[in-house]
Image 1 (cartoon, one colour):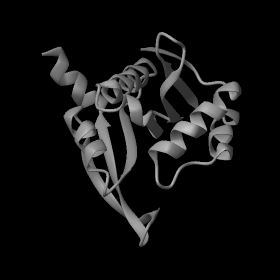
Image 2 (cartoon, helix red, strand yellow; image 1 turned 90 degrees about the horizontal axis):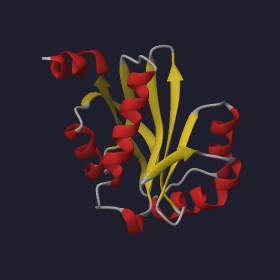
Image 3 (cartoon, one colour; image 1 turned 45 degrees about the horizontal axis):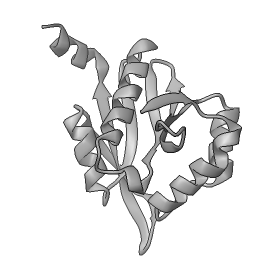
Length: 155
């Protein structure tokens, strides 16, 4: 899989993937706002140049905030989520971030397991953060301490 910068011309494909993968998807305006704000946004394309995944990261001082990460449903369970997450970790290290933070739905245990396996830890719970089918759903705030991670990788 190859990564490249996300462009406005990718919006139709990105929004289509977002809608097919999420019960409460981001709107096209959400994605456009991220591009306009100059957040780092990538798409991950296969050999046929079709978008299979994307990610958006906001740099906040010395932290990287993972705003959205999504793999096309037909491309899930093949290691692409891990590949995208590794790309984000590499990017955060390249800009000298000390921490990567993200929110994940409390019901999204598959994503939580991916993050935990990459070294993320639960930091707190944001009550009623996401819209849910029966009202609101909690978000788990997770973080990856890159300074701590580098200590272990250096030894």
